[in-house]
Length: 328
Image 1 (spheres, rainbow, N blue to C red):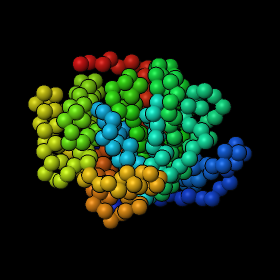
Image 2: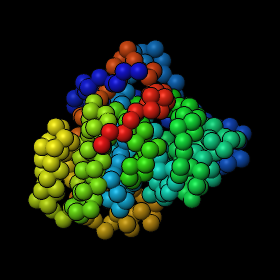
Image 3: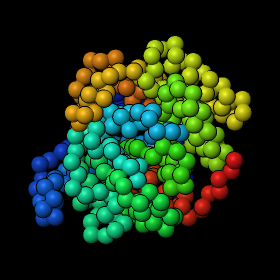
Image 4: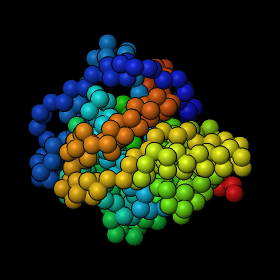
């Protein structure tokens, strides 16, 4: 499968996508689980809608280490994109220590682990989050999920493909670090957004992640977000340092997509299960995230009209089949 073309529309055309959410009754199993079916809640597209449909490549949100606020960024960006008439699929791809659902105020009664362990499909696992975002919750403390081999990853990808039907964009909140299963998710994406903070350990690990991506998959665009910066000057210094090092030693550099200021409201809203961009839309941090979301859509490759049916999880299966070597 070829990667999505790098062209992208401008201005209002990004928000011309129509999305219809209906109040359809859930399937019997979902009634048992007490959930609606976000997959069925999107109206099927007619011929005219399909002809003008636009789809974006999948975006993996990543970090070299934990504690950068990556998951908070993922939750808020997905909410913003969902509010701009995009049909968003958000996947908690931290298979071992998932917590994305807490930030969205969701209480899942199952998780994607059941896709491997049996009994449920993607329709039963999916939940509807803020602004109609379709969410696949992860699981926490399940050892088997934290150490998936390629065969298990392939099985999981095939099962998740059902959830991708009808989406305009897929966002993955990946685990921090360089585990093999995590790298496969990044390599299959159309773009990787690396989240770092001004802390030296976070910057060092962010550079390590960018280095590994550049050596193994040079065609993947990499964006950079500086989170929890004290001010613009600090954020710009961090971005300049990382882009300069990457250009000098790796021959390519990530694209700075903005910065988000330190804001204690993030922790308070997380405890309430409310994305900051909805709870405090006028805050400086929410404004910064809106700017990042706009730049993200301008940077991520789009899927050409002739290949609209291509799916991220099909590409993930191809990456797993190739067994791309890790070159250091």
